[in-house]
Length: 584
View (cartoon, one colour):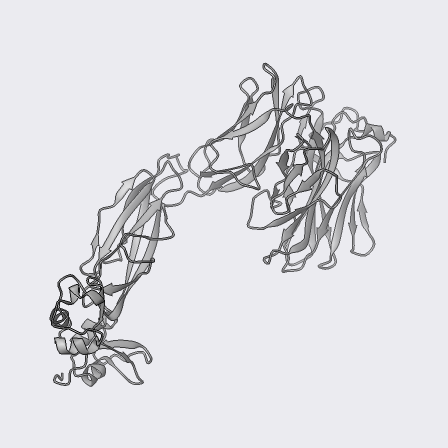
């Protein structure tokens, strides 16, 4: 340490996390993000803060690695300052930056990295800081612990709350899940384990508090792993109603883990505004936010209007990125009037073609959403598309060039409106469609609403394919059809058809109006099911049942295009109508 009293405490906050360099070794890089008072008397006189700064303190800031033989200790930790504000400036007197330290472990471990020192700024007495990060390097374990995003001091009113977001070390949100905890309890403070919302009880007295949180990565089964990060927070609990409030404009949705979520697309400008609501008329406002990595946003703050603007004029194709930014506003000259931090999740996704709805929109009265259809019964569905880039326009919604409409079907004209599209398909499968599978592939294309030179050019397209299976040996009766009518459709007589449907008592009346068959829509059997045996081929099956190859194919659309001597798949099923009076 250096010879300065603990009353000269300069530590504001810190987080520690790690990332494995490669699965081929056990090299780990630790990242310590920390903030300190700039006016601390222990810094070198006239130091240029654009250069790496050796961390100093009443007890020297130290990184200790535990569990890999004798403890490895480093007291030569350089802070690479990336943000600062001078004493006397609004929301000022601090420096902030990162320390990186790489270590080669001897094996997968379990290890602990501890960042320690003294003293916490503004705390009475000798208050040390002590942060730990757990490390385990098994191949099936996460290769990182999360980076935690907070401001150096968090202000909150009794009964209020704020979020401590966890992200990948590179700054992006990923598919990992986390578990938050407070291993060193502080009365009146709690954290929601699943989303990192810190809750301050309504009876907590205003004043300064130190809070230590840990965040662990969860495995695929939702169990806590040994990949853990931590953060030492300074929290100022304010008097109720004495702080400005923040609200974002135009957020797409609210979320439990972030205060607000924004989604944008490459090729389109990004613009977000955050409003500050004053508590004192005419007061001056100042704003503080976490580092913008990995988002290349420009920020500007209108202290008079109380509006923070975030903008990115031209995120191009290939520049998709996402991250989290946290903010707080201070109201001057009331230096303790500081808002709770607000965090925004900003995602800039690649601009893609219009997206098809996951489910088809069925338009008939048939229950469910089955694509197994029956001959004689008309069915219809709509395909719907929407372009996530709301300024794009859906230009076309057509069948793809390699798709043909089934015989007798109809595709209604596309209805295109802005960034949405809809098209309806109708079909009553013909008597020759049974046993067939009919694939329809729809292709949607967009027209860019905003085009940047060498940035967002040309159309984007997407495709959705559906397959309709038509059941063999089944026919849905239409109005006023008699048994003879149905028999004629399948090249047989009413006696044969009646034999296939013994539940019909009076075959000489109109089947389509028979009460016990539910009239229109009743389903008749139109043949027998035959299971293909070993050595069967198309012509042999036709001969076996006294019919022709052509008629057998009419009953089994899946045979279309097959040669007469083509072998059939043993165990498959065919629809047949026996006729002992015919031979090829």
